[in-house]
Image 1 (cartoon, rainbow, N blue to C red):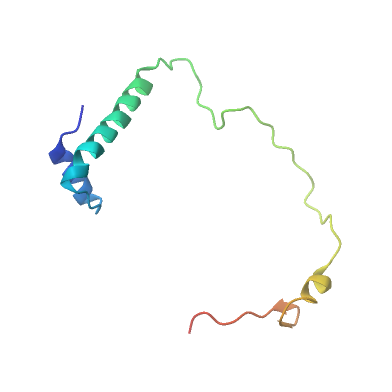
Image 2 (cartoon, helix red, strand yellow):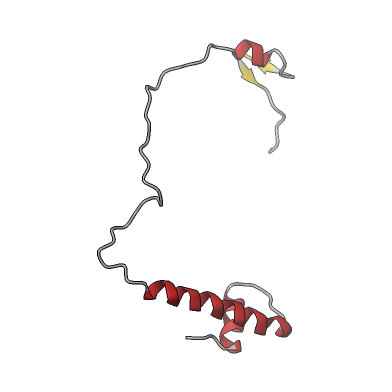
Length: 95
């Protein structure tokens, strides 16, 4: 179902997108191309094919949720401009 110029202008107005009269034709052609591609995809026979969550079968490797690095907070905070009670102090951005 190809779009006509009136439909493109209505879509632009509903989307709050300003499209000039000169660009309406090109936009119509691009949208019609997208719709043609969608029609091609919908024509594919997908009976018997199970939906997939990912294009490649992956197994999630899980590990224990434990700390694997040493506590380096003091080293990181030594170079911070300001800290107080172990927290970084930053400038106020909102009143």
